[in-house]
Length: 87
Picture 1 (cartoon, rainbow, N blue to C red):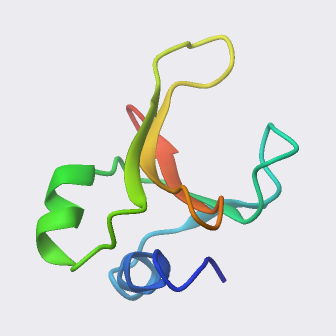
Picture 2 (picture 1 turned 180 degrees about the vertical axis):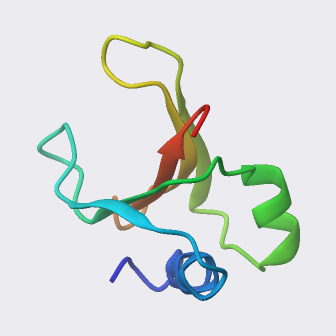
C-alpha cells in the first residue's frame, strides 16, 4: 500500500471500483510505491474530499512519449497515486 498520506485516496479508488494498472517502483530511483489506476484523477477534487497533508502535491507529466499522467505525489514518502491523463 502507499504511504499513510495517500492511503485514504488509494482505498477510496479501489472501493469505488477503480482498477489498478501498475504498482511498484516508478521511473526514478527516488520513487518508492507508485500505484496507477485506470481512470483519470482530479487532484483538486481529491484534495477537497480528503484532508491531505501539505506534503501531498499534484504531479503532472504532459509528455506523451514518457506517459502523460496526473495524480498525487507525497514529497515526504515519495509515493504516488497516479493515472493516465486521458484514461
